[in-house]
Length: 475
Image (cartoon, rainbow, N blue to C red; front, side, top):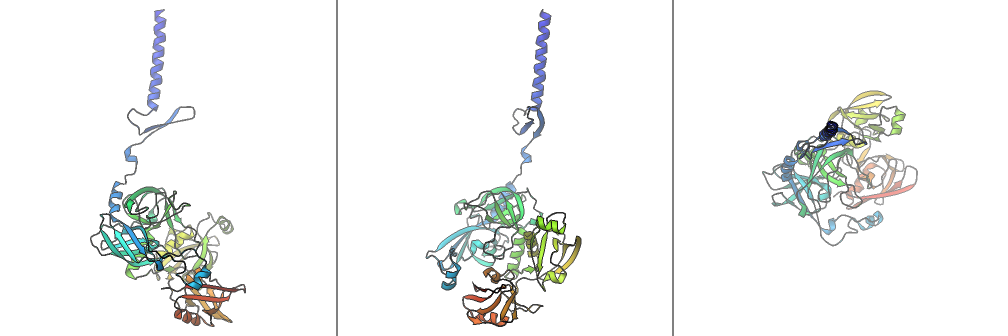
């Protein structure tokens, strides 16, 4: 009897020890909260994941290094230079560019990044646009007056300078090497001076992003999209990698509320570097032009062209006499790379071309009739002055190409400059400029030169209907 009872006790004890050993091996170790056990639906342990502090990214060096080179930018805008209200263009044309301005002086703010020890600072064009005074505050609380060296609305980049030396700087990184999922930091002054030098972290959630362009402005957009928190005031601030190098300039958010909702966008450092170098060396951006119109390859185009994947840029038209035309690019070609760099979207093509100067040579790879062809392209100047005569005899006028025809002056190519933004279209025949009849391109240019404020164009559309549009002259 006693012997049987002892056997039962020993069996229960052994079973308990066995069960404890199984549970112990699957459960997290005592005092080790970083150890996690994963279980299947029936409660059985299937895998154990061991995490330590070394598995998490350490941003301390990048943050402490980069924050010293990020500044707070405060601007003052006088009434006559305030941003236009949303008013009917009809009233603006007759009452002038000052129509709709308020009477009060306004102030705004943003961020900037020191890129040279002698006081050169990069920020956004929209931060300093129209500013009469610019004040820069460094991370050490020293304040300086700044002057604008140059701006580039097409990329929303501006360069300003303060009178100082020995400043901390951020080094440019190669933004083309950024990878999806890579950690980045956003540094700036969200929502005003009280939150100066704020640092947030996120990952690169997309590359080559563009946003709706409702104003038909010429823009070069190939944004880095991140989920690092960015708010108004962060504009012009730094996006840095884990090494503390500059990979982008924070520029915009997509939001229905005006505040951060999960998506922020930065101009890639490779674009910024080229723009500010041109502004320092030449005083303006030397824009290279390929000379095509088209768009990102769609699924429909991919099937039609029998492509392996819907990637690349579909060429719908080649500008006559342009760089692409001279290199042998043809309509319905698919551009897939430039100098070996893959081109998947139109924003990527724009960003890549923007990295070149007029006269630079490049190898453009296209797919034509199922075959891969490499073409040597010499980029042309995208900033052609009014009155410049092209190789095809057309005359440049605010980004467009004009030629004399019966009954007036035809817009052969509207391009993507100020004339196109105002409503000028291919095939439009200009008959009057500021109420004066024109018969040749030089008439258009001469009248425009004499105009003190605006240029008003009347004529006939390509479909034969009366049409008109106007735009303000450059200052």
